[in-house]
Structure formats: C-alpha cells, structure tokens
Image (tube, rainbow, N blue to C red):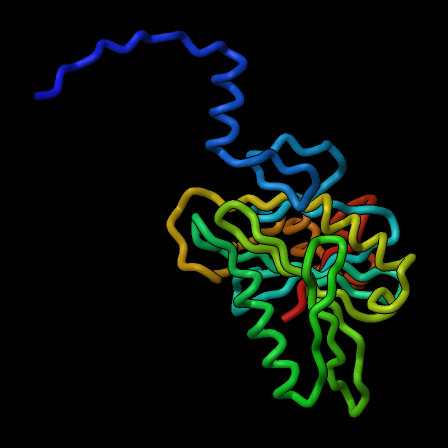
Length: 227
C-alpha cells in the first residue's frame, strides 16, 4: 500500500519562467533571413507580401510568374543574379536536405556536376550547370525557417567572385519571410504580390507611349515582371 506525500510548491522566478518559455519556443535567430515574428533590424525593404526584400541602389528587381501568380524574385547586380523563392515547410522539420538532394540529382541528370560544401548559411550546393554548351557555375543556398523554406540561387559573376557574392549574401541575410497562418502543403510556393505603388507604376508603363522611361519607384530598384 502506497501513501501520498505532499509536495511543497515553490514559485518559479519570473526570469527563470522567461528562459523556460523561450526554450520552448526555440532559440532566437541571431541573423537572417528573418521570420516576420522575429525582432529583425529595420532597413529599406520592398513589401512583396510573402517576402520583404531588401533593396539598395544599383539593384534591379524582377519578379517570377507562374501564370498570373508571383512566385519568386530575382535581383540583378554586377553581372550577377540572385533568385529568391520561399516555400511552405512542415512545422517540425526542415526540407533543405531533401530539396538539396533533388537539385543535385536534377543538375547531374542535365549533364552538370554538383557537390555539397559549407557556406555562410550552412551546407549549400556548388554546381556547374550546362547552358549553351558551357558549364556555368551556380550556387544553391537553402535556409529552413519556422514553417517556411527559403531557396536562393546565385549565378553569374557572384558565383565565383567573393566580393560581389558578399553583397548578395547580405541581401539573403536581410530578407523577411511572411509565411502567414493559412494551411499550406509543404513545398507550396508562398505567394507574392506587387506593392500598390509598383503595380500602379507598371500599369502606367503599359499605357505610356514610351514606357521604358518610367520606373515603379522614384528611387531604389527597377521592378519588372518575367515569366
């Protein structure tokens, strides 16, 4: 026969409770790309809905469309391109390992080469992708976030020039991902949208006799749509 022993309750100090609560939520991110719920540093960013994209003078920003849906962005800088796509991911696990394997298999099937190496965001894929009969260097970067996955593809000069690459890597670090609360299938693209002022400028550009002289923003990058 077992008796019951009364247990003395001791209050948990407020600072200890705060540490416990923080541990339950997971460690705070020390650098970006950031989740919209993070306390991220303020700077000029283009609000694309699912992504808040940092911009600087000298950048040209283009948008990837699948039908009428905006699914990604491309930053052109110094003979280089940085492609950014954000996807939904499972709540309790990342998908970069799986995606990286799929990318490597696709590159090799196309006659290229791909090997893993350690980069500023962890393991990335260093590839040589055939294009017009020439193997072009490409870097595939992946970052697993809370219920989202960010894929960055660096090509052109920045794939081999560390100085130019550093500028584009800083762009990746300052991206803010806005996943939203709606249910999404893993690997489903997080939908983007044009900010109102850019959409208005593009509509004016389409109607103008010489639309090439118009810019969606008075300063900062040029935004165009690519399909």
